[in-house]
Length: 170
Image 1 (cartoon, rainbow, N blue to C red):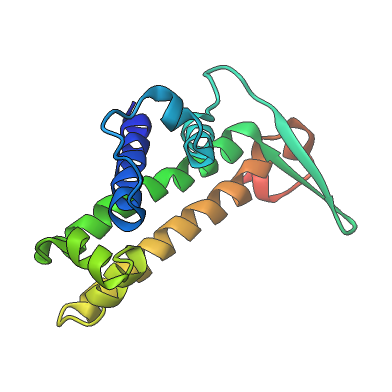
Image 2 (spheres, helix red, strand yellow; image 1 turned 30 degrees about the horizontal axis):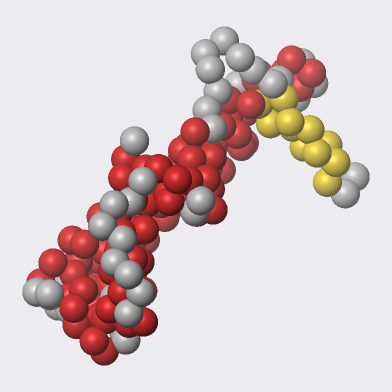
């Protein structure tokens, strides 16, 4: 439901922008058809909708050069779940840019996109930039460490690997 509302807001904002810049008729009502026609909405639905129900499992096998790489379904889906952090980006942008009053008007009048890239540059030009860089660094260490740990340990859960490696016996 929240993905629908976000994309409904985006369609409405695009309609206002087209009305202001090119004089098209302003669309006051944004219906479900307008939202469902956006490809980004369906990408978001797929990103947020993929999950693995309880008691379901599978193995993913890849031949990588001479090696056989195997992952459990639970591991792959949990790592996919960590990618859902992209939904925090708009919130982070709004928190960083809350100091700019009427930023949407300024953005339209100057033609500058006040998106996440501008917000990142703005945050890194403040006195707290060192703290922010440390937070980003430690977040990356934890996230990539979790991803590596999941991929490393999950091989021991596979029945075909448990008896053949010494690492899994520990």
